[in-house]
Length: 175
Image 1 (spheres, rainbow, N blue to C red):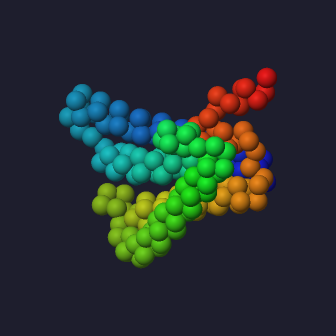
Image 2 (image 1 turned 90 degrees about the horizontal axis):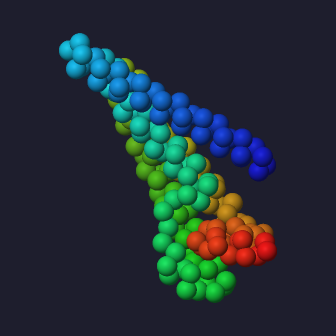
Image 3 (image 1 turned 30 degrees about the horizontal axis):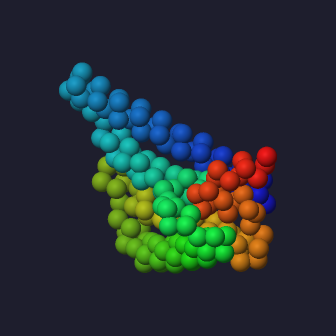
């Protein structure tokens, strides 16, 4: 299962590269057209905005999976192993609750977005803002699996060290 998730994350990273490249090409092309030829492409403005929305939300899932979000470990590092585990469980429960609220909000907003269309390209806005489903489920499932590993005691000491900002102790244990 872990290999499948790793493959999915690699595919998402590839999609992020494509979205970012698409944004760069569309925005740069529009700048050249506006300043060089006094014209522009309306579709590229709107698509660049939508690519940015998708880039942000897909990137949040990838970043969360890689433990790369900002964290404040100053307080957590003052605790011993048990205190760190308690903080991790509390943090994961809060994140899971936030993702449930995010999913519910996207669910409630979906019919409104499905009835609206983008002004220039004409696609349903549910295709743009429906990314909230992906993000809430992606982060929610990731944190649920992490929480399950923590509660059942299957989380490795290295994983706990990385998540509590004590990555320096990983090298010490290896020596």
